[in-house]
Image (cartoon, rainbow, N blue to C red; front, side, top):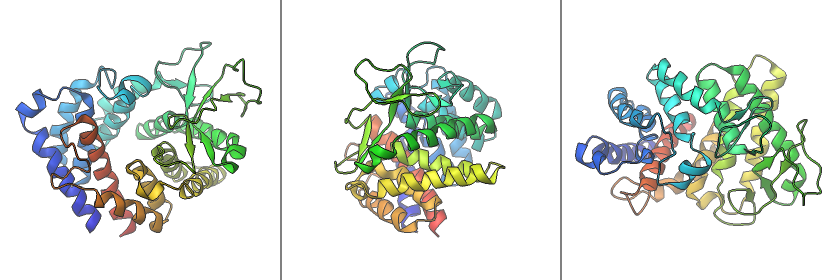
Length: 326
C-alpha cells in the first residue's frame, strides 16, 4: 500500500491548506485549486472533495487565463476546465460538467478533432494543433458522454502517431502541427487534413528519446485516454486501433532515457498500469514516492503554485496505480 500511503500524505498536505481560509485568501491562483478536488475524491473523501471543488469553482469563468503558471495562462488555458469537468462528474454535478465542456469545446477544430492551443479555434484562421490538447478533448468528451467527439479527437491522436512514424525511428515525436503550410517547410503534410508538424526540438514541441527531462506526460496522457476510450467504443476495430496506438506510444516512451527518473512521467505510469504493464508503472511510481517531502508535497517548495498543483496530480495517479496493480 506504499503508493496509497504516499497519496494520503499528499492529500493531508493539500487539505491542511485548502481548508484554511487565511491561506486560501493569500493564494489567489487557479493552479492551487483545480486539481486538488480529484485527489481528495480518490482518497474516498467525497464531502471534502465537494468543499474543495466549491473553492475551485471561483475560477470557472477564467479557467487558467490569469494563472501565474505560464502553461495555464498561455498554451492550455482550458486545462482547469478539463479537471473541473472530471471532478463535477465524480460529484454528479452534471450542470457544471456541461459548462466546463462548452468552454473547452471552443478550442477544438471540429472537422478533425484536433485540440488547439492558446486561443479558441476560428474556422479559416491559422492555428496550432497539439497532441496533449487533443487528448484533453478526448477525456472531456468522454466525461460528458459525447462519445462521437471523443472518437473524432482520438482519431486525430492516431493520425498524429502515424504521421510521426519516421520521426520516431530517429528518436523524436513531434507534438504540434499547423494546417497552414510553412514557407520553409518542404515535407509533405500528414493525415487527410495534410497538417504539417512544427519540427522544433524544444520540450514543448518534441519528446526526444536521447535527451533528459522531456515532458513525458504530453504523450502519457494521450496513451491513457486512448486506453479508456477503447473500452467504451462499440466497434471492435476502433477499440483495437485505439489500444494499439496507446501501446505504441508507451513503447516509444519506455525507450526514453530519462523516463524512470522524471517528475514528468506520472501520466505514463497510470497509462502503463491501465495497459497491464505493472513493471513500468511500478518503476515510475517508486521514483515519485521517493521524492515525497515531510510536508507531503513531492517538491522542495511546498507553498508554490506549481508544487501544489503537481502534488495533487501525482496523488491522483498514485491512488489509481495502487488500485490497478493491487
